[in-house]
Structure formats: structure tokens, C-alpha cells
Figure: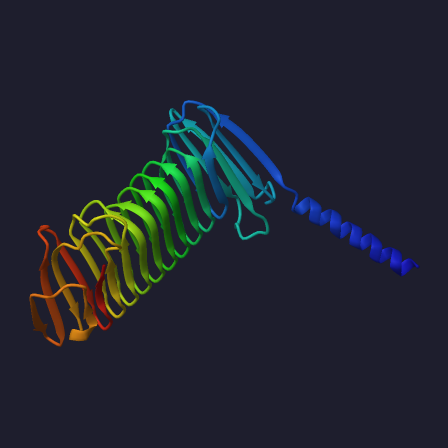
Length: 313
């Protein structure tokens, strides 16, 4: 009986200690007259959404001990600086989660060491950087610049220039309008229902584009994956598709095929198109086929190191 009582008491004390150690703290502050927000976190996740007024409301929820973790809020004129500071090593048990409600028209600079970044439903300019977390931006009008070391990038329903870079993550862009510069070292890139001028590359992943309206000279490339681009409207600008060892294909999806075509691959049979070529030449151990189709003065280049180079109608 005494042994059972001791175990029960110890279990209760452990529960009390755990609850105290990991109890959640919450701080909310509101600021007015803000045009620029600089948010920097070590590992905390951040969610940015639209406010119901012209004020900026910052909420941080955390479970770190208060003698270790110090949220900092500092307004200097129209600029708000928010960051988290650890008095000792931050490798303690706990987490932090930031939520910012911001009005339209501000500039946001969000930097985190390993947290995730999510921005939605607001018209602002965003610069987002994470060492290893994911970045998700949707339903936004403004310019976007994002970078993550190893996380994924996701963009949806963006209106404005949106640029992204990740060392080893995947990139996905859906239903977006605006010029786009996307790069990943080893991940895949997928774009769907997009419009703008594009510069998209992957070191070793696939580049897949479904439904693109090209608004200026654009390029899609990968070192060793496939490049597949499907158009959603007539092509009126120069376009380059290239891969080192995969297949490269351009699908006009029913639109008029016109322009000057230069297609390159390792064999004649690996170059395919629904039109006749004007000439074929050898370039070292590779073959080049060229054709002038229609009367558009645009250049379309499609090349593959060891796969197929193809045009589809």
C-alpha cells in the first residue's frame, strides 16, 4: 500500500512539473502607423494574415522558460522590429509560434532559422527566408522574394512578381500571375495555370508546367530531369527548354505552332515535331534540326543531352 502511494505521489509530482515546464505563455501587442515589419525568429513558425483595421497585431505563443526566452517588440517610426532572443542555448524543450495580423500595403521581412513561414489573404510585399523550413504564400497581391535552404516553396493565387530559391526542396506555383524566377538545387518544380515571364531551373529535378501563358522571353531548364511545358495560349515570345539528361517537350495544346525552331538531341530520332524540318546538322556527337514555321519572328530552342527533344501540337 505504501509503495503504491509513493508511486502515485511521484507520478503526480511529475505531471505538475511537466505542466509547469511546458505551460504555454501568450503575448499580444498592437501597433499603429506601421509601414515596415521586420520579424526574425530562431526556430519559431510564423503565420501572417490580414488584419481588420490599419493596425499591426503581433501574437506570440511559446512554451520556453521565461528566463530563457525573450520576445522583443520595438517600434521606430513606421518600422516595427520583432524578434525572439534566447538568453542561453536555444536547444531547450519548447516551441514558439508567431501570428501577425497586418494591413494591406506594408513591406514584410521575415527571417527564421528553421521555422515555417505562411502568408495568406493580404496585399503586401514579402521577403521571406528560412534556413530549413517551408514557405507557403497564397492569396496575395504584391512582390514576393523567398529563400529556404532545404524546405519546400508553395505559391498559390499570387498576383505580382514572385521569386523563390531552395537548396534541396520542391517548388510549386498554382494559379498565379506575374514574372517568376524559381530555382532549386535538387528538387522538382511544378507550375500550373500561370501567366508571366519565367526563368525556372532545377539542378537535378523535373520541371513540369501545366497551362502557361508566356508574356515575355522565358527559359525552363534542369540538369538531369525532364522539362515539360504545356501552353495555355499562343506563343509570341522567345522560349528555351533544356535538360542535360532527361526529356524536353513543348506542348502547344491546340494553339498555333509558329516561329523559328532549333532542336538538339543525341540522335536524329530523338528530335520529334509535327512539322517538317528545313535542315539537319551534326554538332560534335549531337544532332540539330531547324525549321521555320509560320510567320512569327520568335525563337524556340529545345535541347536534351541524352533524352528526347519534342514539340507537340
